[in-house]
Image (spheres, rainbow, N blue to C red):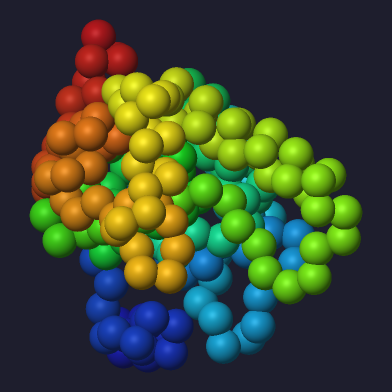
Length: 220
């Protein structure tokens, strides 16, 4: 029986054994590019938002799930899909903690701030930049106004769910001396905490301990 289980784990996960995950915490892994209304090329590692939304609904509806742990290592992606996921996470009325591993870039920033408390490992990075597009643009003034409104929605969400001031966030977003071929700012570990975007520098152990504390406080 154990051999059969090991074979299943090797086929599905690439490891002989997988440890049991606590069933009172839902772990949500957001990696690669956040795929939205347009399907990404098959060679790209993606997180599909239509897969995440049902999972978040189950977190709300399942009384056995006491908390949500969001782990991020994303380059960003579809802005509307990412912001929709961030709003969905933020509206869940159970304890929530996020951890930025590797990267929480672009639309990954509001996804990181959507929880009750956020962590970032010392070597992780977060890129803050305005919305951009590539390819042919028809109706430049109209497209610019649409981007401007979408940008304001993102700014308002980050300000609402973190400690950074709007003026400081916009200054980081439109900096011209940080990124060679773009505008914006790259924050590494402690810098994201210093600006008030992330709550604390820490790894998986600290983040899980904080979530356990929030769950206990909610039960008392």
